[in-house]
Length: 241
Length: 247
Image (cartoon, rainbow over all chains, first blue to last red; front, side, top):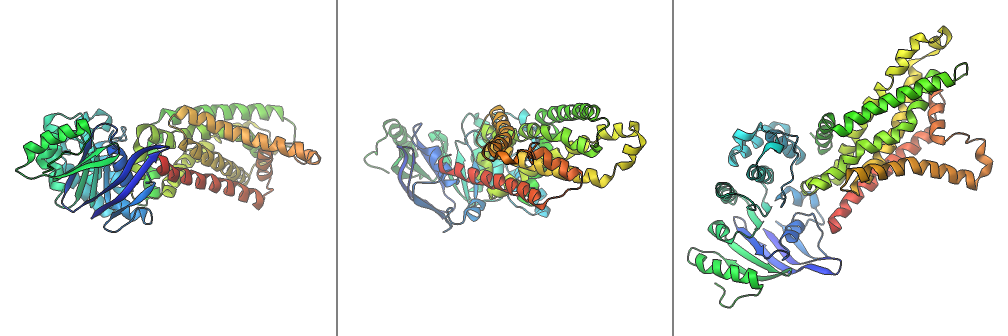
């Protein structure tokens, strides 16, 4: 579904992504993790067409963003790290605006918005101004925006950062449900939570992939320790599960 | 709804409640009214027609209003980070730019229409021959040339706002571009071809307003303003596309 093929990206002389290669299959939730500055956000920005890689390629269902950018972007939903929103709008107005901007036909807009509000648990906040929302609700609204057009690929940059436990659980539930019809690539540091619902881990260090792990019910405890060590040291461990 | 319509609608709504819209428009109308009255008194007894006085009193303030109206269009999106969500959406940069530009032009068009209030209020108090000469079509022609000039300033301001995250910096830069560039071009023409000094006694921008207000239409002038507007809007969409290269 998503093919990332030897991607390299630099800011000037500083190489931020170096020969990144991995695939994501439908239904997978792939966590991209690593220390600060490892290149997680840059990788997601390249996948979201916000940055253009220096070399290598990305394809989503064989669609190349460089040759067919609109079709590619129609297939993705993106949640930015800082979750920017229009503060003067209400939750419902914001989501309606985003659905219309993404090209949905007028007749379907209301249904899409109400479905997504329900899916993300935002019904009671739908008439609230965005500027009055808590951080948790803002994240949920950002996630609703990413989900609303049922994209094939969800790109989520630090979706759990700064959230309390109930909000984290809610977002985890929404993502698990969304993975039934989309692939999810998310960046984050919350290894223990992500182990519960992610299917694969990609560990970045210095812009390179240093390890790829598949999660199963038997290796979660070992994997948690291994990932923590690896993120701290930035090296690939022996005896990868 | 197309992406252009959606963007236009959102921006017009944002303008409706924005401090950066209501106050500048009110100031613009006040200054235009004051300039109109001053020019009317100055040209008492001359052959200038009332629509020409209106046009000439409004035109110099258009770059300032445009700079203030357009400063937030992209600078605000960049400072809040919304530009990332817009650029990751399945819309063309061109549609985004046109939607935002049209919203600024909507406010500009309304402001120009409102600036007619003072001339309309003053008209009945003028002497009968002047009053009798006033024709709506002459005002419409003046309105057209003012709108064309405003479109150039708005397009330039929209392009400049892509460069900045700070709205004030965008406004100042846009003002420098819109006010400084025509004067510089005019001065350069006069310096290189002094023989045209008589033909270009006024700054061409005011000359265009005067010509249109007196019924002297020129397709070359219309083409010039449309070309400049398209040029700035094209530049703006290309600049947005360049943001993808290096964020």
